[in-house]
Image 1 (cartoon, helix red, strand yellow):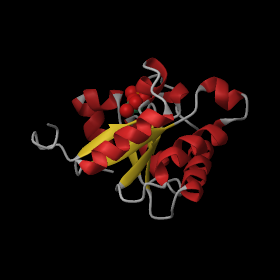
Image 2 (image 1 turned 180 degrees about the horizontal axis):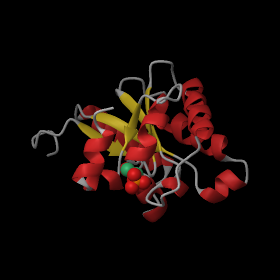
Image 3 (image 1 turned 30 degrees about the vertical axis):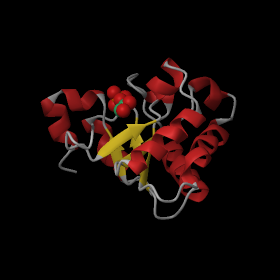
Length: 156
Ligand SMILES: O=C(CO)COP(=O)(O)O
């Protein structure tokens, strides 16, 4: 149905589904499989909650989420690192946290992976986030709902 409608890329594992609807790694894996079979490109969303970060478990959680699907191999996979505590909150990961988590994801998966950052991306922080080593792109939520904000992020 999505392919018939012209869709080429889907987001799987967004935090609203993992945490709001209880979507497990197994469900995420199944969705990635099905999307691949349908010829859809997948952006896999991963990210730790605030409690997980405070407990020093951010890397372990994200690694588990990446590991759950990455050895599929045949599905063109992009990853979006979206710390749950940064989504829609106005709090953005520090540059160092974004850089180091992207490096960790890349080490967990493969060098060739495209890794985007998401979580309160705005015109005033997008350039600096994109300038971090290993941040290949941005996944923009709220700022994309405002034409002026989105236009200020896009030309980068
Ligand atoms: O969840 C997001 C995009 O999927 C991020 O949303 P915000 O940019 O509004 O934090």
